[in-house]
Image (cartoon, rainbow, N blue to C red; front, side):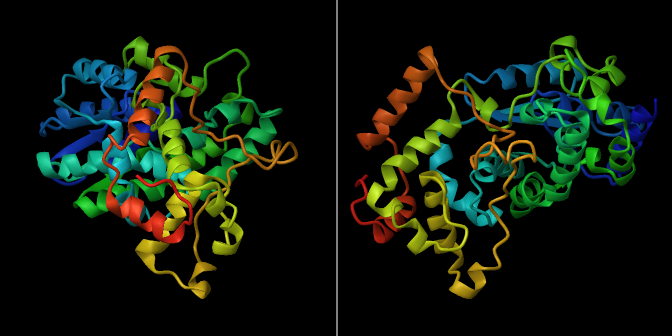
Length: 366
């Protein structure tokens, strides 16, 4: 089919050069499909096998799926297991690299940044292939699949594509480049984007079918069924049973007092933080970049992603990468972690704590 031919060509164009190639393999459909296509072509041309890299908490379901894909493709696979404390400690560096305080971009940037550092320090890989862009192109985010009509979904797809440089593409570029890596994204090939954008919107919103059904069906011979027909999970969400979003929200709740948060409009009159997590990131952002009042008006960040059909409901947009609520043992694990945080058993960097103290009267002392 045309979809298959165009994506194969898109991958081929991004395999130019003699450097060692690698994959950011999350275990989801998009990264797995790119890995499968690229591996086929590299083997056919007699070049070195690519190396797959994955990151997650020790209980991550995605790590297991990534292993399945790597074994299926018979390629080397390096897994980096991280913990919540590492995620908290690296936030100042991530914000500095990303140059944004958008909560969702920062959340997803944390594991991405950690993995890129690992790849740079532990391999000879210099060029990475990734699956970014497919969710926007095929309208596969959960909220998109709840669009009232196929036409509204199509309009949202076009809107999200226009904003890609402000979140996922920005994250990819700025997490890799500080570590001397280059990332290439076949799904955002111009010809492929043009063709998929012209498809009938109804092909992307099929009642009773899994998201990206047309893409899965086109490449059903390339991946094991468990991966091929697995529903989408957000990059940060799938780190493990522990909800990284809840961890960061709770940490921000402890770092930012209610008194200080009530002053947010005075402190940040432009793009005022809406949550304590965002207040935390914004404080670190301005500490890093020493932005004055004039320059503050030129910041391009905080991407609002509410679709047209959602804007009339409320101002709190329904996020495409929204994180699931924890329950049962997972919830207990999160509570234990937050308890350790309150008791100062987690090592929160002085850079994170100190700046909040300087700006915040009445903040919790950690």
